[in-house]
Length: 423
Image (cartoon, rainbow, N blue to C red):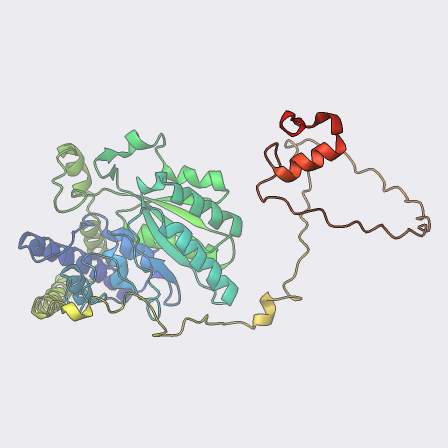
């Protein structure tokens, strides 16, 4: 894959991974200083996944990150100050202080859908985005991420099945980081390779080393190309490790120390630094230059965030509902006539070649169609007699206590008059 990337692109991958890590380190310090309003969910050890997959997309493509995909946001053009101000709930944040975590996006320019806290729900949403893009002629690919625990939710399976049946251009990155909060993968699913779940829906899947940014990028690039060519969705399982607890409040005491030690030797940033050095793509001076640039950017953006004001109370009701503040219109990149009748009409009849028979079983031949006799001329029909409308009854039906029912019944059956009437 190194032959397909330029030297500048290799350096850019390192820049985003290092920026991702240093940014999250500062968020952790701010959290301990009680300057973070919401939670902080570290992606330590998983930076190669967010950066490598998002780097495979084009600017026109769409993505929907989860809580550990800050690297994807950086690749898509968000600045560290957006992350700082968002987590500190400042008025200058993308949500103007209305959210204190990662729930923000940019539908108009960067094509980023805001994260959804309910795990798995982004999959049907991004399937819809992929289908809409195809319908409007945008030729886009949609990408989202899910964890190993989230792959057991109903929305994961419903969304993946929808994407499969519609052959939607969706790349689903399944981050197998070994832990669903405090539950190991082996205790929550009877599979070693979660990529096997794609087979149930008839779509292709890949398994890749999530701590090798070049392998991740190459795999994602191929998956994006397949989706754009119309071959349907692709699931990528990336093997990695969550090197901290579920969030800053979680010390991860349930993880064996030996497991942390094993994965620390496979740190994606250290491995990529070694690769760049061994392949003479940089020198120590270049590394120092990039690291200094990152620290300078983080210093300036963190100061901007800390100096930014908190939102004023008057803004609490603003931006909650859209009451004609902007037009919501589809951006057509193709003539509408292509997706409307008669150009896009089809008879609602599906032909099944083998009638659903067992594989290898030859279905019976269809019998020849019999010739239908010529229809006889219809005899003239007499006009039907029009009877008078029946008397109105009570709306809840007729029963023995219904006076209208009783009178009608006695008229037809004189012998069955009630004893009360005889007396």
